[in-house]
Image (cartoon, rainbow, N blue to C red; front, side, top):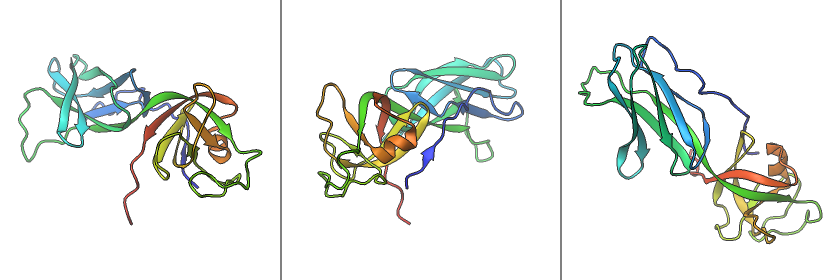
Length: 206
């Protein structure tokens, strides 16, 4: 059974005041601001740069702010892509040495909004478009175009789950996703409504 990450409210503080730190809320929606807070002891009034890790181009600057007299900083990045995003905070024009403390890194899951329904009752025992038998225990989602087996991270009211595409649909109105009954139950989703989604990376081979 896929893991469900429960609702979390982390990322409200600034981290350990005695060391460099970076704290962000673990969930965001694309187009909204990710607020990154942290501390840079002894670096008051210095410029701190927030960077995002790009798989192809490495660390890219996305926002900047100035460290306060309290050694705390707050910098905002408007999330422009979905997925598991790694962020780090560095000082502008800081020389890196072998003995230097590594910059603090934080991870945030950024989702795209979409409308979804759920299905199951009345279809149990039937074969999905991806060749599986739909049961109350089968986790997955239906999508019109994504290849069967594509892993998708789904978020609803702060809960997250990663499941594969197992079927085609939905075929009604403006809905983009159908959640299998087991997936909907794991998220506490019922009826129809807005979810967050993102393509998920396959887990590393063991």
